[in-house]
Image (cartoon, rainbow, N blue to C red; front, side, top):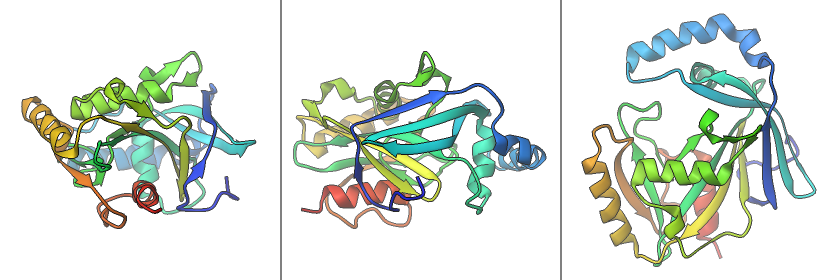
Length: 236
């Protein structure tokens, strides 16, 4: 992946990510630091949960297909990974089902205060866990359906169409795999439905929701993986 340009939208034919058993080298090398950092993270945010998580030591694009090999770990590893400025660390791979309204706006959410990304603004998405596996492979479509439903109440099956193939964006050691879902409703209707869902949830993941209508609108609160894709979407 080192030859893949940064902050660039790369069309791919599909993504194949499988899980391989065995220890993640990053955990072996940083076990004590991961544990110590987790204590600090939970002290600052008691709502955090050290659930199942995956990170990849191997990733490549070969003949248009994105391949990666996951190793099992837990969320504590990811929190340490985020604090580690070194480039000598595994890949964080995640999928994103992008909600596109009938008036060509992209729906983004602001993460809630109890989440690990409080205040950040991006398209509804989540990292993969054990629930996203079919056999030993990650189900990208199933993950997108679940994450969008959990965060917004919307059903991606409602979309009239979706991108035939996905797109990849790499920023640092993060790799995002995007697919757009085109809804037959305008942005104001989608936003109203999502806000009603958030209001009904006892512990919502989102504090708010907004519509992105032009390149450059996603600012410093948005990870570059997401803003790169949004800017590309609106660029002729």
